[in-house]
Image (cartoon, rainbow, N blue to C red; front, top):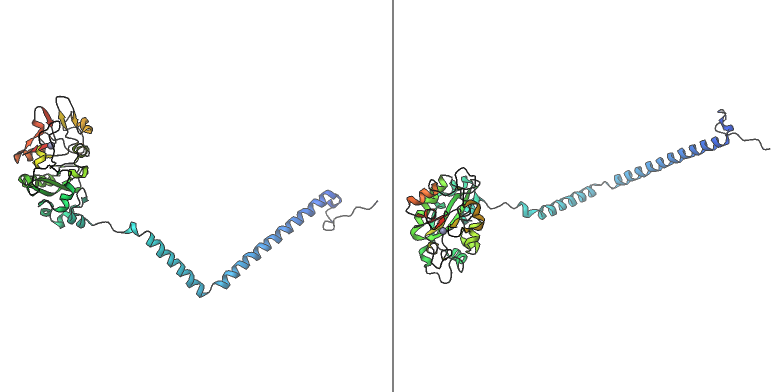
Length: 306
Ligand SMILES: [Zn+2]
């Protein structure tokens, strides 16, 4: 029988006499050796990479890299350019009189308050908006009898907003004075733009709570020409001050129904209710207008005419 060979690396441990344990320990040592070799290889690889970068780190390459970064930056900045274009200044908005736009009070001061409450003949640009809409083919009112008004008003947030009105020249000065006073006293009106922006559709304009004046049309539910057809009537904040047919209960605009009743001062709405203690009511009455809210067969709270 061949004598058992003890493990050469573990002569003094005495455990080498167990062949299984010896094999296991040898395997373990081999594995550790293999791992050490692996780390050595990894270290050499990193060293190689570092040497490679070092050898390529020349002035020429640095310049190339910087140029590449610069080109990327230019490319990115030109791509994002549309969002960085400055928006129109308030002065431009005022000069072009972009109705329904909010401007700062400082801009109004600089522009001049008198220039913000002014009447003009109907220009070709304005007439092109009205033609075939509020100024219908059968319109009997000469264009020369109408005026385009610039007015300011406080919107529902209390901010200064640009407004525009087409009216008969006969009431142009009244409207300028009334709207100037309403603005001065902070009276809130949601929107004042030409009804032509709603294709001269009264229901649509009222539903949007748009204040408007001239529209060559008949009185709702009749064949009689309205005072709006002459540009001698104006509807203020029509959504919250609707037109009510007392005979059938119909409310115009339809979405103004919740505001047809319970019209008390304590009720919170974004603009004032027009009633006999309302500033708007008082100013129009002072200027000789009639109020639709005082009529018997209908209640037209939004309406003043002269
Ligand atoms: Zn009206």
